[in-house]
Image (cartoon, rainbow, N blue to C red):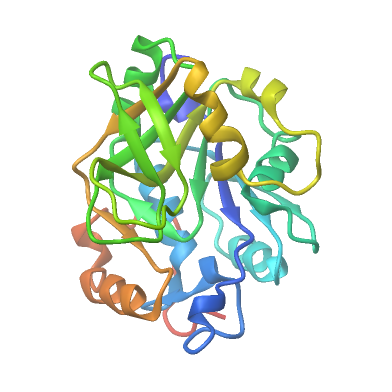
Length: 253
């Protein structure tokens, strides 16, 4: 595949947002309101800017809210939804979404974080390395609730530990993955499983590479981080022009 615009983008939106219950208790975490629109719309806009026209949402808790919002805000791109009321884990959610994926490779995103990387560069890196899987990584910071990734000199992933008990140096998982469709053969034979704990650590024996980005990485996993994101995202036009998605003023719902 030569153009990122031809990649399907799978967005994992099944998170319950338990750590956000004190401030967001009535909707999926990815639907958390950011100045009149849901967080997941910020994700979609970023990739629309880079030409993406096919999004697959893997939803769970109150997934109808996501379907309804995108049903009312159409803009020349395709949205498809896979919903299961029972928690599937991040891996099970990807496995379900694979039924709708057409492209090879395809992109997978966490629905509660946003990294402003250039996906065209990510695809070129993935192609040049002849990777079976590529993970976007950022320099490690003080956060302790994200995956720790160790890279070799050639950017090959040497190890990956999800939410290690001790603070690490090296790189953090940015929650963006580019997969060759052949990784489906490595999926565990179970309905509910974790991408980060059960698949990615096993890929170290495969052509699995880390794409290092200095782009800003945001997540809304805690009330404090949500406040920070709302603060820096007051003017979305600073980050990208809002031209591809019809917006309505006023309430999210």
